[in-house]
Amino acid sequence: MADHSVTHLSPEQQARWIVERITPWSGSEDAAWAWYRSYPIAALGGRTAQQLVEDGHADDLLEYLSLADRGGYA
Image 1 (cartoon, rainbow, N blue to C red):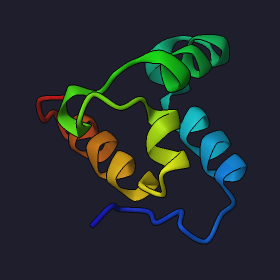
Image 2 (image 1 turned 30 degrees about the vertical axis):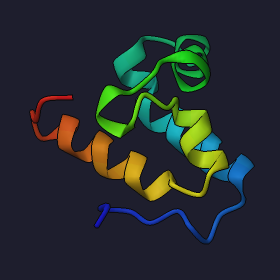
Image 3 (image 1 turned 45 degrees about the vertical axis):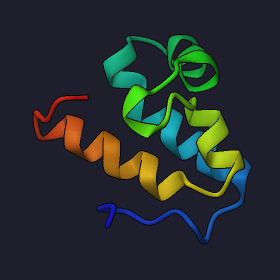
Image 4 (image 1 turned 180 degrees about the vertical axis):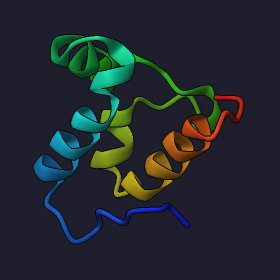
């Protein structure tokens, strides 16, 4: 289970929450949005973060990000 569930948020709010979380990694908010929209995540079926949120799998994305935070292979 993800460390923070966002299922109670709208997809737009989920997207903003995720982008805010990854902005420190990406270096800027613009870079975070670019990653969110276009980077295929192999560990999650090659889907982008945006696709995962749109398909109702934001918590899977958060689990992935939490693993990366803890030094897991992402």
